[in-house]
Length: 422
Ligand code: ASP
Ligand code: MG
Image (cartoon, rainbow, N blue to C red; front, top):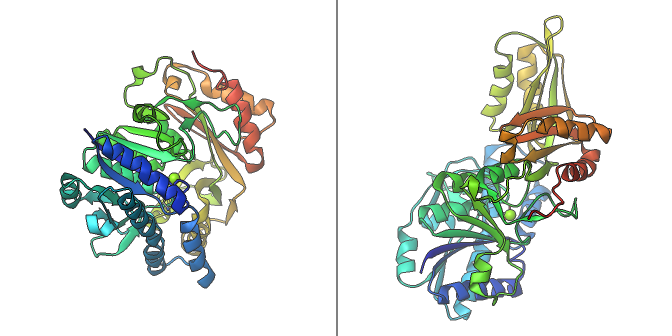
């Protein structure tokens, strides 16, 4: 008997029929003697629907007061799906209780729409588990110290599930989703993509941060920090398949590098269409400009990804960086109104039609020339590279959005990712 956390994504919770299936699957695990905690997402489309309603009422706002209400609104999606799942479990003859984030409580900071979990109180949940109940906890949400409801950013239920697993010291956290694991790249872009049976935690961290949508990045960070055993698997297998078979399917995120039988140099290709590039043109080149620009951006809680400062010419330079596309307007606004006048820079220009394509693999540590191979491949396809960034286990490039599919497929082939490994 073990304490197990299941997480079900929006598609898996997409209708009462599917919720019934989830309940049957969870009931199977509970009847096998496991203590079960389940963290569901909102029913598919629900979060978008709710946020769409807000948008109908107001143009894009940037005030904190507005973001607070967005969280108040969006959190209802998970409250509904959690209650429905508890009801479905009860209908299966399983004692079950659901809790909203604030009832547990899942405490977060106050960064509305992208709050971070700070602590989880496990008392109430443990008491229910001890009493033989299946506990359902809303994904995606928490509460700040002033009792405001917060949400964790899109896809945040993954993070809720892993954080709950960490707080309860669960044996394993299983992320049930509409794909059957982690792939070498998105099969919708490259049909030759293969499922990985294991992927190292570090690779998963890079892939998640680089735009693979399988897991929210924070969830992987949490898993790493608290060594939560994490598995991504399909929720579309029949609910009554053999429990052992189910428990070993999908992709396991491992912490042992040598657990990987064979070390591919590159394990996956990630891509991301969610970024936009911002350039400040003709910035006087003096100490402190990076701080003046990016300090202001950070203060506005806008995350910056890649950064490039060009060589200076006649005491002036160009400074470019990328931000998430949905924060692009906010960032440009801020730069134009506050930073530009203070800097004496000439102009702010932006490009939203970019994408980032990355190769990831812990094998890159022990191999030279991997990045060069990537650049050659892109040049052979006639694709211009606008920005480059590297770490020990990844190389990313920013390119024109229209070449994204082409780049992903070419790289997938060049690094032999379509070859089935023995
Ligand atoms: N329902 C939220 C979203 O759509 C959280 C999640 O599904 O993980 O982003
Ligand atoms: Mg998700």
